[in-house]
Amino acid sequence: MAIKELPIWHFQDSAPTTVNIFIAYPGSSADVLVKSTLITLEQAINGVQDMRYIATDATSAGEATMRIIFEPGTDPNDAVIRVKTRVDQVMPLLPELVQREGVIITPIQPSMLMYVNLYSTKKSMDEKFLFNYATVNMIREIQRIKGVARAQILGSRRYAMRVWLNPERMRAYKISVEEVMDAISEQSIIGRPGRIGQSSGIAAQSLEYVLTYKGRFNKPEEYESIIIRANAEGESIHLRDIATVELGSEFFDIYSNLNGNASSAIVLKQNYGSNASDVIAEVKTTLEEMKKSFPPGLDYKISYDVSQFLDASIEQVIDTLRDAFILVALVVFLYFWATGAQH
Image 1 (cartoon, rainbow, N blue to C red):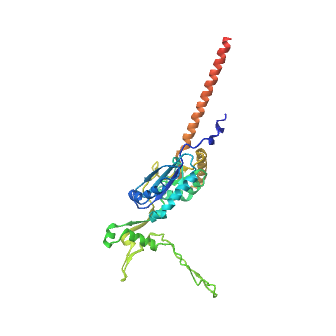
Image 2: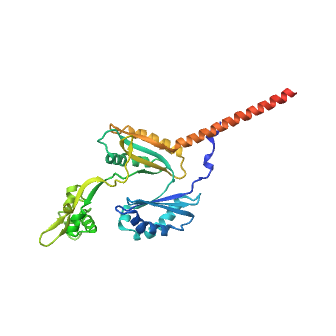
Image 3: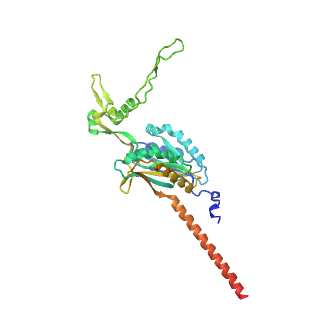
């Protein structure tokens, strides 16, 4: 009768504390990522207080994950602070692009909590649309749920301006990739021109103009007009002369489909100290609320749910207790019946 009131919070966590570090280095190979970033981070983090070991994975898509495993019972917040202190010490040694993309440090349960597929039966809703719809309308709402450590979409389909370089044209003009990147970063910028006629405080100023700047480019035509090289005679080489520019996806490394339909795969992981069943129940409630505002043809499916295993395990425990109670009651009854018959 009291099975649902058992104080399960008295039991310690069996899984060791884990801190995850996600690193992104777009355009690099796994070997470059390891030599330029992961070795530096591992050497800095190795030996942090209460650490057991480090596990690292690197992919050819320019992404890597480091898992720092601590002794069971280590406070997750303390573990994150210890790791972050070590990472901050070597951040200036990492490549500039890695620093700009960010090194994300989070305490996270190593096992997956849920796997949700956002899919559409309409051909007009491709993976790019589904990814960006989930990013804008779903991920932030799900991450606000208590107990959700991370909501991640597998395979980034975030809209990005893709520049496909032509190596033959670059070789003919003797232009390097670094030269192209420098030109893009110098001409596609967020400008702050300032003001004209601002009062100096000494003399009165009747007119003041605030200067504005367009900001970063957001159209393929604007990127195609970037000047890569120019000389005094007025000759110039534009980006369109050596590359093709289009608005596409950030990465193409992972494809997600559900029953032949394009989908966006959302993976949820759990925070330490939270109850998986309660978190999943709240996630399901939130998804049902979101579904009311889905455009026609859009739906979701929960492909994996760890609570099903938990519920099945609890059900087996209840069945075992029920069978044990019946057997004990039967044995006691037979014992007293046999004893009474002898008398």
